[in-house]
Amino acid sequence: MNLRSHLRATLRLAAPVMVSRLGILTIVAADTAMTGWAGTRELAALAISAAPHTPLLLVGVGLCTGTIVLASQAEGAGKLAETGFILRAAWRQAWIAGVILLGLFHTGEWSLLALGQTPSLALEGAEVLAMFGWGMPAVLLFAATTMFLEAIGRPTSGMIFMLVANVVNAGLNWVFIYGHLGAPEMGAEGAALATSIARWIGAAGIIAWVYVTLGGSRLGVRPGRLRLGARRRRRARRTGRRLLSVGIPIGVAHGFEAGAFASLTVFAGWLGGTEGAAFGIVLNLFALPFMPALGLATAANIRVGQAFGRRDREGAREAAWAAFRIIIAFQACIALGYLLFAGFLAGLYTGEVAVLAAAVPAVRVAGLVLLPDALQVVLVGCLRGLSDIWPATILFMVAFWGTMVPSAWWLGVHLAFGAPGLVASVGIGCIAAVVLLVLRFRHVVARPL
Image (cartoon, rainbow, N blue to C red; front, side, top):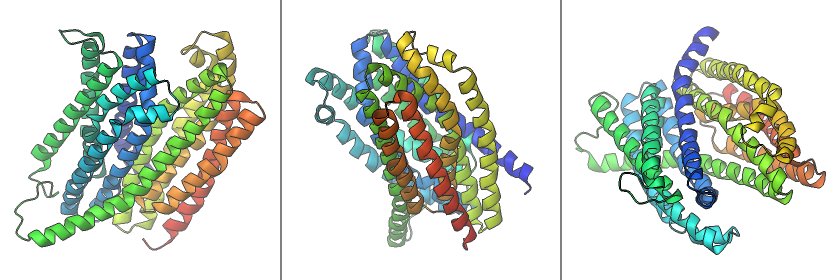
């Protein structure tokens, strides 16, 4: 394949994955926007529930990521039946992890009190968190199935079901948040209930679709007759261990990343309400272009993993460079918009003069940080495609906790540069990650695959 073919193949796979990842963000945005109309107290309860919700969700999704790594490698090696076996093992692990998270979400009051919240707000946030908990098995089953479909080159189905889940969530929010159609008025708890129901509908729909459309194929989605029961059980245990060997470090990386950004949020809180609000605006603006970058990282993971399965070193290298070229062009356009229209973007969130004065320079700094942030996540995806899991995870954590968090304290707090200093520290951490991960990728791809 020449460069143009690599670019075309990557974009064809990445486009629906990008939309699917954006769908994760739009569900959260709909919950936040619609709960805000129910009152400040309800919005505060929803916001505080995100403190344990988001990191635990990221860890759970990280555990499922082994599906995309192993299934893409099996597909590249032509072992189609192996992909279905990986999916069934991923379903089992997603169910177990989801049930564990469900239990953890029902200890929300204790965790929120430990984070220093008032008893009344901790109780309200815990009720919201418990309602989110009922959907955790569903969201992990949905993630594992979507990743399987992306790995075998069928990403459009996951995108469609994600869009359906968004529509269902918005409709159920209208019912449960405000008490329409005879339902009780539940506020933030209603938003969490709507999200959990939408997650179950999405998971049931996509699993049923896989069984109906792919069950009779050579992918091995349906288990068939268990003539060699003991042998199949040994194989299932071995596949489960392989999935965990990939998923655990990715889950750990997600948790440490969430913890690093939580530390920056704490620093912003030390600087006062104005700087904290400004930093919150920038984090929201970071999330929008990051989700497409995450989708492209998934596409890079798959295409590099398929080349790995074929033992095609040059194909893996070219697939990675195609992803780099695409993300550089995409993020450069977004960064230019952030630099030119920082005042307009910050004004979408607030009209307070003091907050705008702090947010506008921070948004301009964010425009400079977008590219290294996107590059590091794409590099991590490429290394995962090469099954380089723990070394990439360790380098990622070194960059974020060894450079980003200390520089955030130094620039934002000690030197009193405020929100712009905190955002600049994100750039420092991302540049460190890019340098370390590029060196690692060059080393790994030069080895025998």
